[in-house]
Amino acid sequence: MSTPWVATTDGLHAIGEPASAEFSGHEVNALTRAGDAWWALVDRHELWRHTGDSWQEVAADRDLRLNCLSAHGDDVLVGTSEARLFRLAADRLEPVKTFDDLPDRSEWFTPWGGPPDVRSIARSGAALFANVHVGGIMRSDDDGTTWRQTIEVGSDVHEVIASDGVIAAATAWGLALSNDLGEGWEFTEEGLHASYARAITIAGDVIVMSSSTGPRGGRAALYRRPLSGGAFEKLEKGLPDFFPDNIDTGCIASAEGRVAFATDDGKVFLSEDQGGSWAQVADGLGSARAVAFA
Image 1 (cartoon, rainbow, N blue to C red):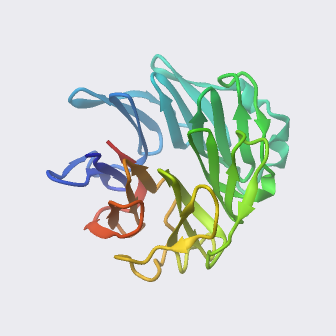
Image 2: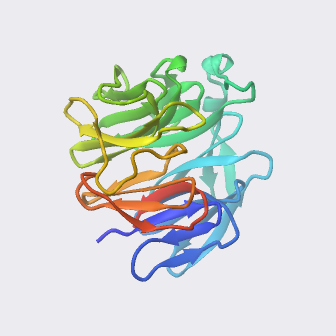
Image 3: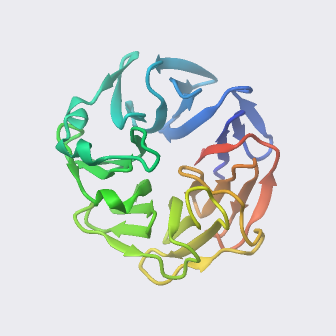
């Protein structure tokens, strides 16, 4: 049975029996698995890989903040501050120059006036999707040789995911869903108490997504709806009515019908039935940064 791993501001934690922890005292700010290898971003500047019995640092960038990553075999992409994208080449992170040269970059922004970020990355077959915050979603059909924008900048996308050809995004306007690799998008907030969505996963035939009243959190909750359509249903069995802080980008994951999410105050919740009911399985961890299943 798949085990949830939670990356936090105080290390990486396996949730289950036996529980274990790595990188104590360090922030693990992103986590993914490709085949037998785990990949993690540590302390915002280091890329680490786990194979066999140990973790090893494989590359670093001390100038930019490393935000998110995607791994497919040995092809590893890292999204960073200043809305840049890098690819692992031996022991170096090399810039994806075609991403740097996108003509749309002048339209990207942040509400607070700082430079935008690459916030999440997804892959569907040969297609790559990079979520810029705030800048929409960029798509490449040729392994990063060329890129183009697939959704409006003002959609304010917080996470993009891909599953069996379906591309889904948590946005400031609710769910954005595409069944044609981003050529067209359907937006919906039906059933949500508030449209500001921050984290998302696809668990079999359902979408599980978080929403709140805004970027500072407040009345955050978890919802699900069938992948085929319909209104969102608020998930309540085993959960509090609302969470004070956002359930953030990357902090919901699913595998084999199980769904797990982690919170800013160090709690972890697990569902065995695609989000229908929940049990709290951990507390007292650092603030959540990412969740993934072994």
